[in-house]
Length: 148
Image: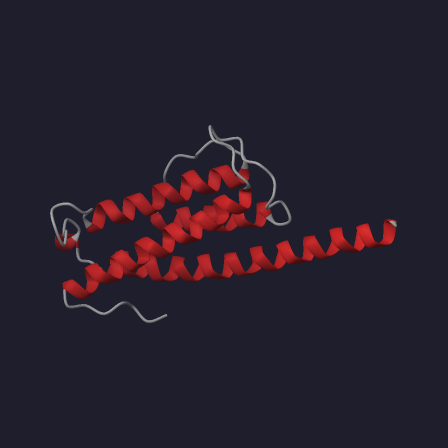
C-alpha cells in the first residue's frame, strides 16, 4: 500500500510545481506589462481618472504595488515589508511564488487563514484586473498598451 500513497504524494507535488512555474511565468509577464504601462504615463497624466469615482493612475499603481506586498507576504509567511517600487513589489512576489512551491495547501497566518494556493490565485486575479484597468486608462488617453 505504501507505493500508491508515495506515487499520489509525488504526483501532487509535481502538479503543484507546474502550477507555481506557470503562476510565476504569468506574474513575470504582468510585471513587464504593468511596469511599462506605469512608465508610459507622463508625470502630468499620473492624476488622470476616467471618472471621479475611480482611482487615478498614480493611485492604481500604488495600489497594485501595495497589494503585491500584502498578498506575497502572506505567501512567504512574514510581515509585510516596507513598500518599495512597483517593479520591486513584483520581484518580491516572484520570490514568494518560489517559496510556496509545493505548499499550496498550507494555511497562511493572516487574521483569516486561507490556503496559500487561494492567496496565489487571488494575486494573479488582482493583478489581471488592474492591468485591464490600466489598459483602459491608456486607451482613453489615446495610447496603446506597450507590446510585450
